[in-house]
Image (cartoon, rainbow, N blue to C red; front, side, top):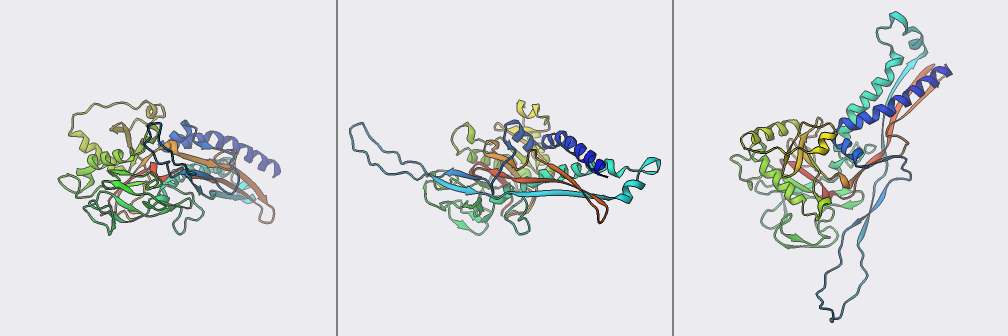
Length: 373
């Protein structure tokens, strides 16, 4: 039996090295993370800690002769996430092994355990990028992007104040905690100096950790009906524009991923317009041709996008900035196989697991599209 254990474990390891690469390429987000070197292996410690810059030095007018006022600048907050994990398991008794062979075996269980485990892992792992790792029952699951998309009603479109969900408002009011830091507007300091957030101008510390969450059913958009089908272009354009309040090329969104029905309705809306399709070569190189663009941002869909979560009342979409994301694995590969033989039950046990987490440097660089009111 020892030789069988050794053989299966070796086969499992070699199989997974190639198979996990295909798993990563199967989802556009993980494919982008892999292409840009945003997947880290062999991470250690209790969990990642990183510094988030939340404040800027105040600019002073000076013609070269005036007196400067000096003060020490405290620019950083520290974020921290613990490592989480997943496992898929199977087992086979000695009786199964000795009977399930030859022409009588309709399915060779021992030979298909590896395939079944990896396929099961592949089907479910990509969907974990969207979960709320702070929610009850998710204590062992990774911190997907819903971990920082919590809300408290909507943001009054006229005053910028929080209020109960109101159809007139363009964005939800952020109210969450991610990696030990609050996502609330002005949660640590700062202010909106002109206009109403996310428009106008705010000090850097006011929204340094705050995502934009667009209410695509808002009556503030100009659609003939307050639905995604009628307002998808306007609401997405609004979200893309407000996400670009981050200065520089690195601050722009790389990708918007929609629920399948939302993507179909978006294409239907696009059909009525004369447009020039600009091919995104990066996405094409990754093997994803089923997408279009809006204002330079690739738009596509993916299976498993959640609905009606964290204040949303229906189908959703997400905007990602991959340069501010990192998928960390504490092991030498993303998925690590193990096997062992329990003599008392005469059972061979198999497990393939992941220990790590998804890190988003700051929620500020992400977008959510949902019906909030």
